[in-house]
Image (cartoon, rainbow, N blue to C red; front, top):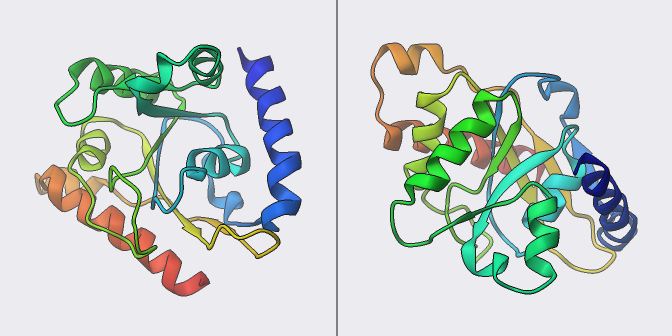
Length: 194
């Protein structure tokens, strides 16, 4: 599976790198081992590909379950570390899978907004990001995708420093509060690097 992931990553990278003149910032702060909750803003359907090919480690993503029912595509997506989630309801199986990814020391990529921003501006995050951040011992890394996705225009992917979680856990912060902090960190990265 790792071999297919590496192959797919190199193919997508070879197309996207020149097409979107991608600039990647902050990979030196990305934890080299241990569970990582990677939280990014969502501006385009290509966001999972862009985050995945530029992250220093393989990334596991949730993807809407309909994708897995499409012949060939479903198989490719699964081989690229994605797992299904039922949208619009609390999917306990997806939550368990996400927690297992983090517990096993892998990188779990999440778009806290849950859907693409129509305006390109950052939206309100859902509580899921805070849930995973509070319930796991994973590093929480904010990531900003700064567009637009225009051929031969520069696209930036910025990885921030880990968000300290100890005090938030001690003070019994809610999942919603933690998600707000994560979204604020992503917004700061956008403002600094835009």
